[in-house]
Amino acid sequence: MFSKKLLQAFNEQINHEMASAYLYLSMASYAHSMNLPGFAHWLELQTKEEKGHAMKLYKFVNERGGRVELLPIAQPESDFKSPAHLFEEVLKHERKITGLINRLYETAVEERDYAAQVLLHWYISEQVEEEAAASEILETIRMAGEKGHALIMMDRQLARRGMQH
Ligand code: OFO
Image 1 (cartoon, rainbow, N blue to C red):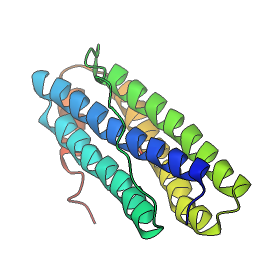
Image 2 (cartoon, rainbow, N blue to C red; image 1 turned 135 degrees about the vertical axis):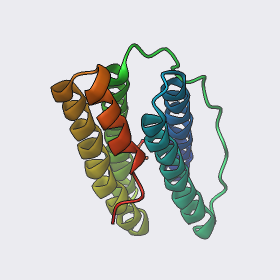
Image 3 (spheres, helix red, strand yellow; image 1 turned 120 degrees about the vertical axis):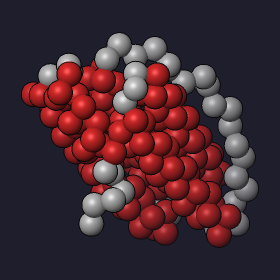
């Protein structure tokens, strides 16, 4: 059974993950409007991943006998200036989420909830990957430039997400 404090913190993190999904869908919509289907594909898959992150927490709360309470999701940002700006925002967002996951982990430690700590190890590692992926794409956009051929190549590369392995 969860402590009340940890249950509330988990419910808030479910909300942050769902808000992340919503933000990336908003970003995907911007990419479509810029005729960048590869960028949109990458962001739509990210939306799916974020929903997966939320559901993993949801499942855990249920398994522990807690009651998930869904909190409101604010309107996501929709005004992006360029593909580089888009990924600056992705990276900024993931850094914020890393801070929230770390804080959640600290709460699990304070509450001496070992099962929650084990679950959150996965999220801590996942955040390393999330930040690295966003940072790599941002650096590539900056190096290649945001115009013409370079942008088309980048779009093609992002279109391949989920197809490599
Ligand atoms: Fe859920 O990792 Fe991104 O936000």
